[in-house]
Image 1 (cartoon, rainbow, N blue to C red):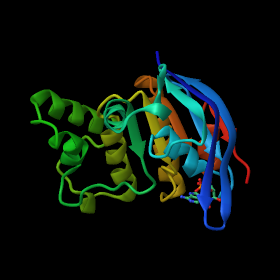
Image 2: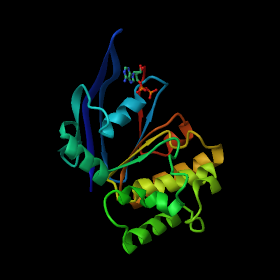
Image 3: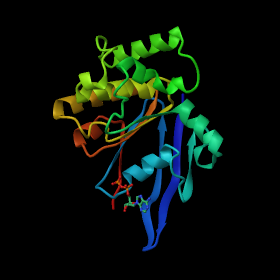
Image 4: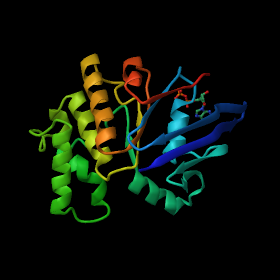
Length: 218
Ligand code: ADP
């Protein structure tokens, strides 16, 4: 059982035109299998909050604990290890490698570290089946639809069993019916993989499927 505790985080940016308050007093708590949809108008701080949770930006104030690891005070080598071990990230655009098959795209993050084992390959195949791409292992992104590519990127993001899955507008470039089925899949996987899932979305239909909604205002 994992727990994410976001405690009074704030983010300010210093710019030549003065200080910009990107995020004000933000606190929430989530357990494994729970999801939170960050909603709010453009400029309200959704991406900033996701960047802090993804250890890409430090907060100006406050702390974020994942299973009692304070992710806001990790060294750079600890941050790299933390991201690799505990985080999964899904973007609005899938960022798949066009020259690689669906299977290779799921396995790609391992290539820099070690040889791919039979177990790795089996897990990648299992995940591609779970996201509905049983017959598409060897197809390249150019041979897949937008929704299918996003399914590959979901399999890639959960390959290492992350404790925390982050998604920035994961259905933003999809049509209604693909957006609904991808959202459904993400919330199902949150339950079955016992992850904590935080997403930013403009889509009220998608937000309604999450356990909690966190509204931000400009
Ligand atoms: P959203 O994702 O909800 O559109 P953002 O998190 O991108 O909002 O931005 C929140 C606020 O912080 C905006 O006013 C934006 O201009 C500002 N901001 C974001 N990143 C930076 C940055 N690197 N430097 C200065 N201001 C920034």
